[in-house]
Figure 1 (tube, rainbow, N blue to C red):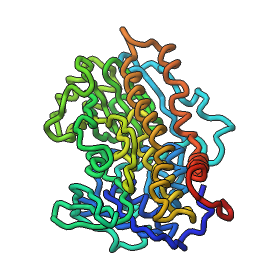
Figure 2: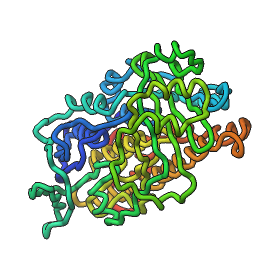
Figure 3: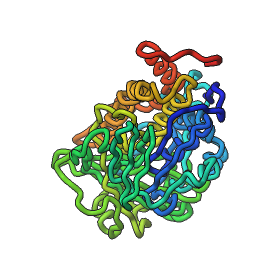
Length: 442
């Protein structure tokens, strides 16, 4: 997966600026540095400390991180020193929590899953990820804090001018927007239409409980060993072990399906603490194991889940979007961060290609867009659809057989996505349109 180009020996004639110092932004800076490409990173916060509720890495994300040369460093910050199998187990949220579907019994694990295989890894919170990447940045002085982008314009010379809230500006030939779901760099690509971001009518209550506490409560579901999904009507709960099985991370989703998606706007904060009773009332009547977990979430936080209306393009001129800035999606496939890392991997490979220079930079970005825009938007739509399936189990919704039919095969195409094939397709497309010479060992 690692590039065969001569990294760390760049002769590039273009300047790069990355807006956003989150996971995708830092991964991109490190990935570009492998080709000797310097990138200034502009972060709106006062330090690298992104708030997150967990990082779930599917095998596609792991392969992308491996291609960027950061996998081992990232995994060293996770729960285990290597990726591990943790396929999702679906159980009913009601009654005695009957088994609904087990991915371990599906076609996920086959001989075709070579290399990394179908594995998952988790970090507790995204600062773990950021702290792992920081030592890999070649030039700490290239990171700039308290720099909130307000707009991007084009100078008379053709350079991109980033405008910041503090009144300063910065010029670059290429701007990479990695500033998350509330991106301002997106405005320069897709316009300022607020309707691009939609509340999904779903909220997620998050918290953690010691596994010993749950054992004392008589919890039988395998939440201490497996990634479990308690499914029901209009609600589902994801529970999985972290800290080597000592803690169970719990995310309880509840959806209001009485109104259309996009008809409600969240005017307050998207993340806020709520009384425990609100959570207990939402899941009243669910089974023993669920209520045992929720009864011990004393201080839950409530997250209003938003999604991005699929963009027609991730690129305008010499501005390109990656990660949530391009395709923020619901978390129901655990694929959002992986799609961001796929973006970054392809973009770094194309920008680091020996034939890429300032004169063909816009064509290179178009090649990136031709690959990433349809694929990431497909995953976005499937993520939303997957949440609908999770919350349709039980009367008057799906039975066990129905759920198996809907769940089988949903994740495999994403986890097995051919990243090297993306690079080859993008380069082939470039050669059809512009002069893009082949190089040795390509």
